[in-house]
Image (cartoon, rainbow, N blue to C red; front, side, top):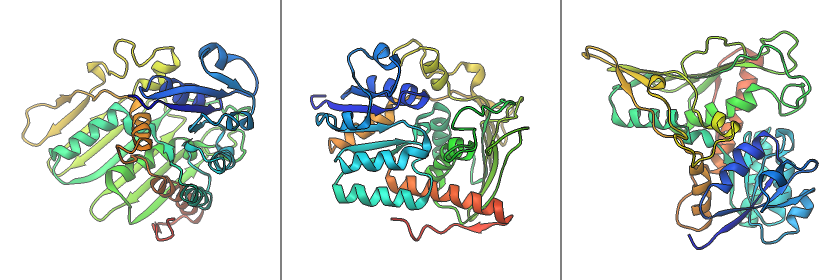
Length: 352
């Protein structure tokens, strides 16, 4: 790769540190050239070869930085991304892409006007379990799929009221956090649903923002259930698929996030691999016993490699901003369905 793209990361919290800086620095053809960390020296210690800036303005003054990852709190995504686009930079925004579909549309139109790449960091398309589900669906082994269920369960009975994600402020809550991933995965697999019904709620005592949801997406002959809870001491299956010829059930979460948090790197032995006991089970009609299905190896570098290749003009962008708009719009519709207590039609006709 001769055309190295210099990239900068804004923010060095969980998103900036784990999901952007670590992935960019490990992706060939990209250089982690700069990080914005307003206070503290953690970024400088972790990446001594990167330039550390204390403000976005300082980063944007460095004209050698082409690609910018927005890893700031969700409520600031729109303003920060807009600032970067106006400075003629290519931008990848951590999920949620924006807090409203109107904001998402504004960013998309601005990127088109400026001729810049704009995308959302939907890294969980590169989870090993999701890649396994894609492979099973392509194989046709389950026959015609009739129900698809996706869980993202945690057990955190005490709300973290000091953090922006759970203090009741804008951009917080489980629907913005985990819902953005589960909705994006469903749209990737099945496209636009016909209608949606949602329960978005606060299950924990003293909670200030939604910490659980159940979304039902209705397709012509398929029902998709997307669920998350912070009070799941016994988590449900990550994926449950039922078809006319069998079922597939997979427990456990992709290991990459926890591996990166523990200090492992993409070059570490076994990175992204799941042990055999975590593999999913395939139950097929006529089979004497369920079949273990080896989990595909996950690799978050795939999303940044795709962004790199899109910038170089050799590959189409995998996560388009229009797809990010659809995810944002479904989050809005989920909240509307919850408040009205009814099934709502899904209309994407005003997509930018």
